[in-house]
Length: 315
Length: 179
Image (cartoon, rainbow over all chains, first blue to last red; front, top):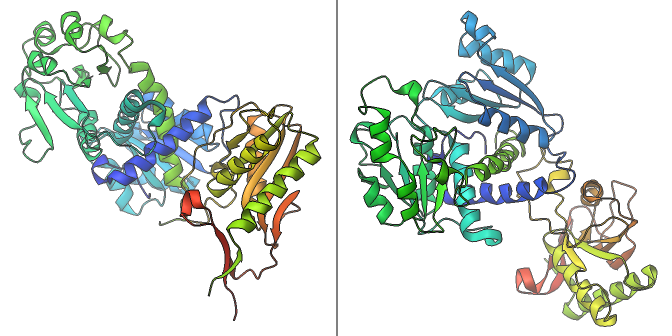
């Protein structure tokens, strides 16, 4: 694999291979020595133009557990705040000798620009770009689902027939987009539930079903419910009257949570707005996989870095 | 043209002999762990463990395991991307005698990687090496303790090991080389 920019480009076999490698990486996390020498001498640069805690820390942990050297770079306090362009930043990183660049950027398509630019020879890993994609988040969600459903027999399997309902701000969510492509590639049935104002205009090409009523979706007893964060930083228009009304219509409150099957999985990519899109009882229940998702994130990102950085250049 | 050098019963006799030799050098099956290197080493390790359990009924039940060395290889950036296999070590290796099992011993680089991998799992009391075929051409000072068959070969030749669990047939053949 040369770059990981989008889950839309992943074939089913590629996705399953990555998830299987992540299983091996998860086994390593259980050992006393959690480090592998695999990427010794390689340099991974974390290039974060947007704020992030868990993704950045997770990528950093993943690269370090594979023995790569990690350089973390936030736009704040760097030359970017002095007006440096992406091109100059990329060429600087190339001069330092970066083998892989993990990039998060506010503009959709920035990782693609970097990958195709020729400014830098490194592999590019998309860690979230605008409202486009966040592939490693979707991969860790799929990994978490597969482990919950198939347990130790997960290797080699997809998510065929698994019914996943994604609820919330689909319009602005790169997590939702990445999950839609990946989960359907793996054979899952994806149902989107959101207020009409928070759905993209043209969903005709998406392999999903769409609903507007969360109660109907809950009564259909999905295998997993993925609650998305209401991104207050992107709420520039009147998408819904106020947060209490959103919560009443589209939040996973205690009453809705109680109607779910006891083995339905409650997912959230974090950070959570407790009491808004998800109640504390749902978030802290054994059905919730929120913390598992974070732990699995490291394994999945190790697998992605391994696939990107091993093998001959240009493969 | 591929030439068969070991047939089904040759392989089975070699494994039985290796199993006896392991028991002899270890003076029994106490504190023994047999770890195969995927994929065919794992199959061979399982078979050797079964033979040992047949010879010594009080041998440990969890004898065989699998040790993937992909992440420890020194050629990861030189060849195509390798897909790792699961590592499954049944018991801790601290203080145990570990017998590594592989199908073909060639450059010794896989075994060197296996030493690193073992090191991360614990401190074995001793490490031994059993291989079905030793074809020579070592790059490292590594030698097998238990060998099914020594097979002098040219570097240009290929040794193919087929095992019924994986390949549906059971033989070792040699092919290629200058003819």
